[in-house]
Image 1 (cartoon, one colour):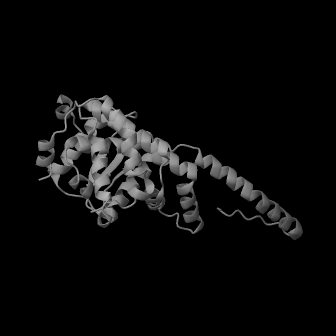
Image 2: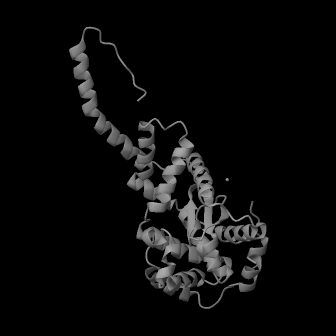
Image 3: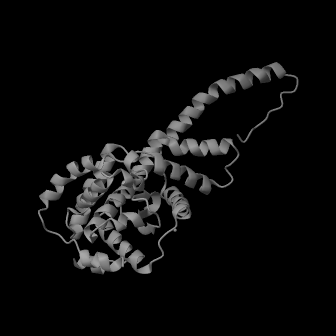
Length: 283
């Protein structure tokens, strides 16, 4: 586990034409333009849907989204806990498919969840950590979110469904385009809390996140063990409110556990769980 100790880590322009006395000609031209406009708009929307964000766009959207997330929930201001979560997350992120700066924070909310935003922002909630038992579980959960960022899963999903593009366009149409950063953040939050990633993306995040944690030296059972804790909690109706949007946007805990267990078993019983260090950093 030397890797765990060696890692360092660091927020229409309307063009009018005067036709003079050619009023009828102007009307015909306008009508033709209006008829052609829907097809042009559809072509533009299709192009936007399949055009990846540039690194600058991804970072800008992530920055605005992270600020919005913090404003919505607040963050835990415990320096020891924050440093620890960043250490674990940055260590696992060494094995991410896309090298970039990953930043981790703890949301101060009773909702059990973790969220991945463009630009490398990853949030895990205080309630999620409270229900964990060891560092391997934390590493597995963060690994899942790291994969979502590295593979640009949310971006691909919302571009494919054109959700954010529509939100921006509607905002512009309503003359609300003065602050595009805020508009992007609002759209991203709607997408984040309402968009169900395709099953293959969620499966990939579980699979690759588990493999990354195992490569780091953690027990490969970390994520599946945490999912089992959540499954048990979810069996009690009084606990269901704590899961927020997870139950509607993710596959069931049972399905994820069944998919992950064979993978975890291939690693045997090796790897670290580090219960004592986990408890020490969240006292």
